[in-house]
Amino acid sequence: MKICFWVTDFLKAYAQLHTHQNVEEIVQKAVQRIQNYPRKYFWLSIFAYAILEFIAPMGFGKVSRFSRLNKEEAGFLLEKLQNTKTYWSRLILILCKSPVLCALDE
Amino acid sequence: MNDQKLKFDILVIGSGAGGALAAYGLQKQGFNVCMLEKGPWAKQNLKEVRAFTHYYKDQGLVGAFGNSFIGVPTGEVVGGTTKINSGTCFDTPKEIVDTWQKHYKMNIAYDELSPHFKTLRELLHISPVPTENMAKGNLFFQKGIEALGYKNHFPLHRAAKACTGSGRCCFICPKDAKQSTDVSIIPNFLKEGGTLFSQTEVTGIEEQKEGVRITCKTSALQAKKLIISAGSLSTPILIRKNKLGTHWKKAGLGLTIHPASKVFGEFLEPVYGWRGVPQALGFKHPNFPTLSFEGVFTPPALSGLVMPLEGKRLRGWLEKYDHVGSFGVMLKDTNTGWVRAFPGIGPLLHYSLHPNDFKNLIEGLRFIGLSYLASGAKRILLPISGIQNEFESFEALKQFNFSKMRPSQLYSMGFHPLGTCGMGRVVDSHLKLIGSNHIYVCDGSVVPTSLGVNPQITIMALALRLSNRFSKNS
Image (cartoon, rainbow over all chains, first blue to last red; front, side, top):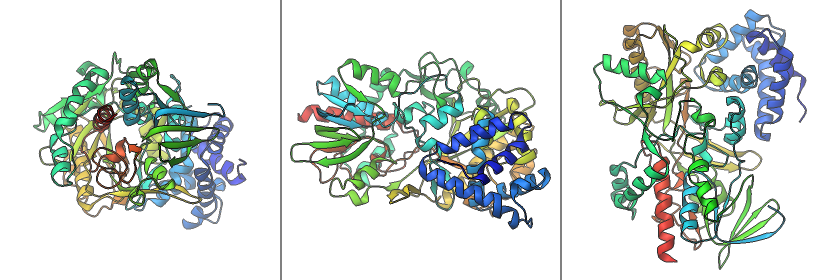
């Protein structure tokens, strides 16, 4: 299944926060992982990436895509999403970051 | 399986704790048995991440929604969840079976199950974990609780033979030391003449006058009897989808999961938590009878997913992961949830933590944190978000007020889904589907209440009891 542009942009930005090496390779592995998700989770992921890439920054006062934020702003946004009292934002974040974290250690 | 019609005496859907033992018991008695397993045979020596995505149901993405989100990982591989569990074995507590008998009016006695515990001990080479094989996270917990005045820790009993402590119990044992059913039971089943089709998904079940007809993608199979052992999450969906028995509408209710969570501790000395048996030590706290404390450790490759952190703080812990240990706590749950499949969405799980269960779980996590700090941990990390979750001071953790915390702030997992086709509700005391003549259920879904202990032996004992019953009636 084809991956939307905002997914690869987010994956690249997230990978760059965690490593400087082989970012392209990590993004490629992450994309493959998402493409192999069961269909339900694939579409959930696409939706989740769209939220993180386009909507989440606006929730924190930034009129920008996540992948265009500088590292500090991106890190701040991720920490805020991780640290909420409800679980929806954490779930969306875990769904989006897990392909990269898994690819980092493969 | 080629495009053909196949006939057997007994078909078994699923190759885990229930399916494999039932199939083996029946094949040994001379029945012609065929097992159908949706998952593949596991390859050894895959990296942990690949094992996680290849052999866990839905790549490990399954979870229950409710007042908290709780991951519910199960296996979809030959061996079922026994292939991806920690191998910890407990006999069914007598008081639990007595409860089934007295309060739920089930026609089942402890004496029907207890002879099978001995058989299983031999079949699965169940033995206590030697101290020298324990991962260090367990030993630090032991040191900590002893410093706090508790001595009633005990080595956990595991189904393992010649275990060298590879630390990968949940991500495919590289040495086949863990006695999952594909290692301990299925080879014997095949030697006795049994048939196993892996990577075979059942698409339809029809009960007929003389037996059952099963359809898979390219084949149809017929048998006189069917045993459904697809697991607590899949069995009720099969029953509902095919409207099997007369109580199919109740299938999926009554889900219990043993909510569990863990605490990380960073120590001054290297821990290498992935070396040794991660789930090696057990402990029961006298003040919290519904809690079971057991060792646990996530390999480095998946650690970033399970820590309640992001950014610099996450990197800080991951960089020191060789100095990190962890220990867990599991709860005998009060509440029940449900699992159902919805058109266009597929299976959904719902489960909410009971307020008392939530409170007890938090106190259990606090206790682990205090134990780790008492044993010399530099800092501990609790699986919570939205409030302080790192502590370096014993007193600060002891005094911290968690009363305003909500279940949605807790990171937890449910490793033991049970109860979705419980005895007395969907199946009878002998595991026959109520209203059916030819269909039985034999997996965790038939356990009618939360067990409070790791359920593998209970499920296997129920399976052997079922297979004995077949021989008496045939």
